[in-house]
Amino acid sequence: MRVLTAAFAIAAGVIVLLGYFFQVEQLELLRLRLIDWAIIIAAMAVLVGIYNLAAVQLEKIRARQKGSIYGVVLLLSLGITFVFGLLLGPNNPFVNLAVNAVIVPVEASLMAILAVTLIYASIRLFRRRVDVMTILFLLSAVLFLLAIMPTPFGALPGNWIITQFGGMLSRGGARGLLLGISLGTLLTGLRILFGIDRPYGGN
Amino acid sequence: MALGLLVLAAVLLLALTLWRRRSPGVLRPIDAYERLNRSVGLAVENGTRLHISLGRGNLFTARGGSAFAGLAMLRRLSERTSVSDRPPIVTSGDAPLTILSQDTLQSGYRAAGAEDQYRFSTGRLTGLSPFSYAAGTMPIMHDENVSTNVFIGDFGAEAGLLTEESDRGNSNVIAASDNLSAQAIFYASSQDPLIGEELFAAGAYVGAGASHEASLNVQDILRWLIILAILIGAGLTIMGAPI
Image (cartoon, rainbow over all chains, first blue to last red; front, top):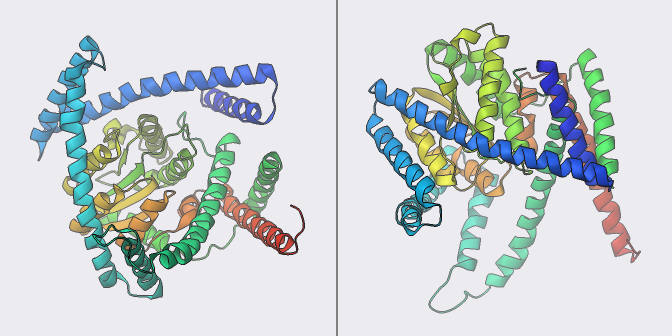
């Protein structure tokens, strides 16, 4: 069975990859069909994931673990929105309200907390490690914030020097990091394509 | 060009994997991975838990690469910690990734001969949007006796909330991401930050095998080729040659 799952996965990967490079009609059709199947499976995986989320919360409630009340709130909200979403459809004003009046404000609040958290983390960085790279990191962050922040008097004098000169250095650095990440992604993909890494089928 | 690079990488990977099987390489020390290996041992000894967060990298996009790198590391870590009183917990913010993480955990338990101890609830989906994922992960870090948090995969700005929670719990943080924003946050908030492609070295540093060491060698070779191409291209441009 494990060999079969690996053979299926590798064959699907090879067909999709070849479909990108060679414009053969049959190969293209097969590639699109496989991607369609993968999308359907991924959609089903969301349901499995939600079941997993609910099962973990139920276990927490049953064991009366700390914070299980939040699990009750989560399961109730999940049940209500799921049932109403199924009955009324995703475009219904009531279902939209659940998103616009609950989820968006909660995520916006977390974003606000994040801003404070990041400032605090930057300050603590000096306590954690003081070296040249730390000083450069914080200095460039502060300079960029000064250069792009809106002020009542308009742009600060000399901000274009920071955005142009500093931007040139940071863009170069970012491209270097992204090149490294691309190479890593390429090699990870090849390992999976060759069946060396198999995060599926229990191997 | 792209196909040529792909074929070259594939040939080099296969050849170097065979070579590395015969003569394992010496890896340069990376502080974060040394600390991770120490933390795994400590977690097993003192009955605390390892929390591995794989981010929310969609497997249908290029972001999935970092998630697969995290899974390769998870396979090895689950094998090493499955006999612990408190098995590791894996969280993710993408449903297919959660299923793969459960499968990988189970494989690790099976390899350690402890499959009966595997619980599907140790691989959890904590949220499907960035902040719901963070909000669902934070209580786990707080309530489940976690001594080390490993964040490896695709994260965004929500990484700041996760590292803050980890700091509050005085637990170790080993963090790497393919996302530049998350890398900046991890740089500011972890003891030994992992930068750029160091994320993809995770497997080699936790002993996942010759192919992972060979991958690092291939990355080095390709990086030098790219540097050479950039230098030649810049030289030709300066000389006014058409490229």
